[in-house]
Image (tube, rainbow, N blue to C red; front, side, top):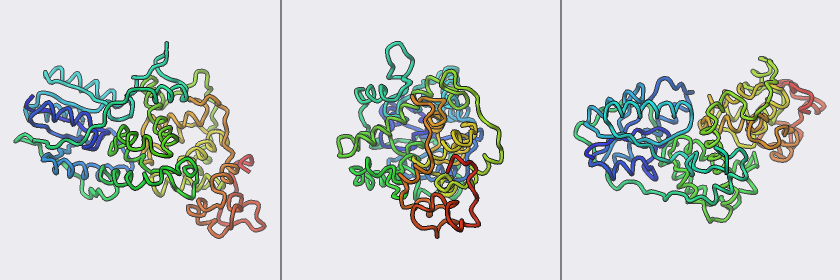
Length: 425
């Protein structure tokens, strides 16, 4: 093959990128391409992070002799147009599982067939490809623990290095880059530095990852979402290290929800659990209080304010805030999941909506009536109250664990609301 186009999507990296590596091996010249789809709206923080990811990817590709064409429009139409313009014989991309991604893949396959272009998809978004592990007589694993056992026993593909060199065709398309594309905290280079630094803390992960104030999680999820870091390489880097098992279990949860979405494309909108009733209340004011972090329950408000400030939230806080919305306020999980999806840097369909359904009791939890008591959670995972004081300045002067129940103080803070629900007390 003389020329191939690699359409980057959620695989914004040069290390362990099967689509890129295979194209470099198969073709004399490769056109790396990313297409901004205006049909996919995103919050400012996610757009800015993506710009940084693309800037870093372009820099990495240039160091290998290549470059990155960044265009705007329909990815299928633009990819085929570029392929025609450079005389490409094929297009490669990473396979993904959302409705949007699978629709894009199907349209691109059809367009390539009509243009007599070769088209191939490759793994790379998960450790184990969605759909490759199936229980006897079923399309996918509905419960995590059996999936985890199968996942551990599976044969994982080899980790690939970055290509040594990428040769561009003479008619490489011009790039369209948005201004302000800083790669300081975004992109593959930042992801690899963060991973290397965090590995020294892996041994204590089991004991500290739920400590809200300590903030000892890896914070690699945004890089995994955008594909700046290969989940397969991440698994390889932590495997066999002291403390690896609980972290690998969390990485497996990510794969688990991707295979759930692969089998149940309606995960974003419809209850996964058969018979789960549409039992939700309609309370717009309560929903707005939750979104704006003014529920009057400090541990809930702290989590929601972290989300608003950082575009990220500690996983334990995600469980607490989601349970409060669905199990205490009785509000629809879809409203909460959509809010998270809009603001989270790591918000993808599989994990965001899969986890929300798990908490709401409509998804894969084997105990659908599970309920997280916010005060008990706060006492256990923020015993000194430092996490709350960090994000809720109205309570900064309240000492110790009293910060979790300010309504019990002789003089409650006048600028902090009462709890929305009595059962939160």
